Length: 628
Image (cartoon, rainbow, N blue to C red; front, side):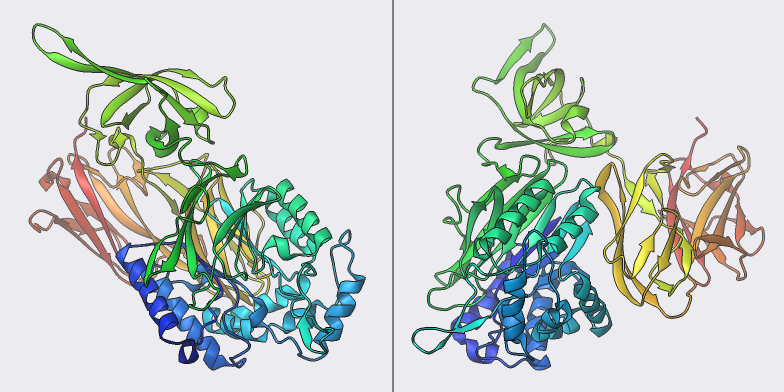
């Protein structure tokens, strides 16, 4: 999962001035030039400047338009992949009796309880934030979010092996007091509370996944009330929180706060005393690490921010050990194909650990070599075995020995091998022919479901052309107040929208995420599935469409409605051509949804294209194959 983290846009283009508007345009150019692509955008609050901008739909629309422009550049089309928390500029401080409410609530709050009353009023004060979400997600979805916030003012989201907790740090922000000079001053420093029990309940909800959690908040942990702060740090440490991302301070820096790495990003604005900056982060589940790269606005250009930390502009975090891991410790990367998947490992080579030589014979001289390589352990290091091969320093190495007696690392002893036809030096992968293609097949595109409607939900995991029957596929629902899953069926429980993710428990990179809308009436989700039936071997396949050229073969199509096999009530047109020259392959109809193919005119190794046209159009490519 890769993300861009922005904060404190304070977007007011009519009054921000030339320097700020130029900075923002250059940010878009920078992302285009660097070809940055991301899965998520994290926005940690302060979408407007409350001292200069009205709480209006017009101002919300302007900032969302800029956010969408950034999202489009980095390849994000779905607004659900833009995750937000509010800032102190995104609420109305004096709405109704809010000042009295937050004073009284803070006085009665007890960290050991971690809850407070009047959540509806506290959440309701975020009027500008609500306008932003209306523009970003639509009013119906935003209303569902704010209804959920009345029960728990924070939210949590699951994506491909990582949880993202969105923590509202501004529920009690903006308390005004009369100081000795007779003027009103903000009384927030060290007084902010968030409701630790609400945070705990969300962390416990995802604890069973065993996945790390990234927390988004507007305000840094150092600005919270001291007792609340200690409680949160304890909860974070005990519940796999690996990173805290925030803004508010208008600066760009990294620090470890109570053993929790905290990344604070600057404004997307030019002003005195402000550091304009952002970060690009990526979670690598294969090595259980997170990289963070920081960029700042200096001399009218976006550049790497070398003062981000003592290690420079880029940091590497070890999620399993919840700490900073300087990239210099394991500066090299190797890739090993394990069980069809490319696994990546950080490693180092001790001094004199790599040697090369030449073995001479009367006929030929062959390059030889020995390697000792120390890899940093991750969840895949135990799967490395003898004879696994990898590429390092443009040479092919085969594992001949392993030593994992030292905590956290494994020492590999290797011999140099001759380069083979499936060793790709450019990709850095030995044995590319061993890489499998995985996909998750759903028997219905569950885009919508009716209120109280139940749908059988049985996804399949496919490796290359075979279904993995024993694979454990998991389902994660972002908003369970809208949609639930009991292991067999999904049920629409309230009107609204959510994201549903299906992922392979053994490899969370293999996943399918789609948006589901719960509507008032039951819906019909239709899916068409192509099959091949080899008559000679009486074998039916939904995945392997290669044709043995001497056998009788049928191609057909099945219809599924809400994941249930249904009767076919429409006719389809089948058309097969040789890809090379467009030659039409003869076939005969066997009903309105199946054909018999004359394979005698097909050639071994040639590619063919099957097109099925009816209520929808489906195309698939297959090859002619030999019996042996």
